[in-house]
Length: 440
Image (cartoon, rainbow, N blue to C red; front, side, top):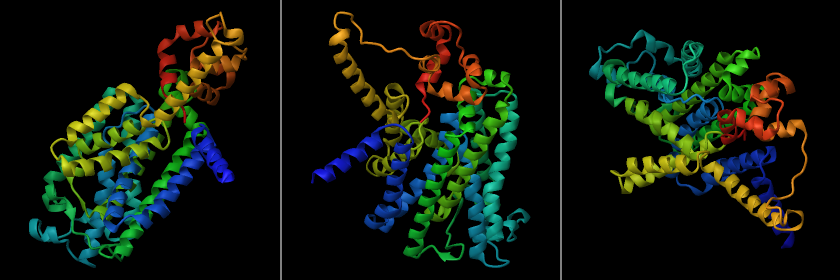
């Protein structure tokens, strides 16, 4: 019995202690829950509902990379989500119509002929390629044009949101080719598998869960690589990174493209799982909903966006059934509370509790031994690199090391040959930005 409790304590210590071991442990737990536990205990309806939430979480993973690590407030991810979803929906409608057939809604509202730009979606392989390529190319072109003009912050957010609104309006106006307000629905098969078969529905869930886990691992690899350090450096001090010889545009565009591809893949899997895609799923309101989930979960963490988006989607489903007219108010109140009291999201909560516990221990230690009568706890000497990290933040230390070593670290973090408090006072804005968002 004591051996079991010891193992539990060791496992809990690994999960609560920040670091690679914690990330791998949480990922293993998530994989176990998603791939083994959920299919075993949930009904077919609840499992399909969870699969829908996982598709939304794919969008959140990309937002966490672009916004949390890169500082790009992406309010238009509904565009890329919709592109992937509509490309997949076109293929499913053509597959249901048969070789040379015409989708049913085109017979009712259109000319009875398939438009030429629909024809490539008859091929499953071409559809998969287009789901990835079209959003990636659009994000590449848009990101390059915007970031080269140094459009960022609220201006970039408004621009991306306007793009989502324009995309939804375009879809509504194309009744003959996109289904208009009704969208595309009534799918019967997915790459030859009958969607009415419960076994195939479970297979779709496993595909969605596996895809989400792969995306999380890809983002983890990016965040811990040299590119991840550069992305954080661009987020905190873009001009200084440019001065050191790096191109911030390429760094930001790559993250933006990855986020667009993740959103498109989530949209493509959303279509067979939910069975419908319409302009209401890709406009301004859904785009803001994606962002709210990421903010509540913790945008600067790895698993925070996933947990936040799933929790918000689950709460929306549950509360909208009981209180359909109050969900919007509840969502806004929850967002305001988290931003006001937990700027780092719910993922910040364990760290905040841990820091409070350590602060309590430090206060207790300050009243004993050498700390008694001095009003402060004993201090220890640290080297220059550790002092610079304490002043500028861990993210700045890693980012500056990526862009040029220790000397560049001092230049990029804004430090001068002075005591650590003086260095922090010389650049308080940078110190605040660097210390409020930590590299997970």
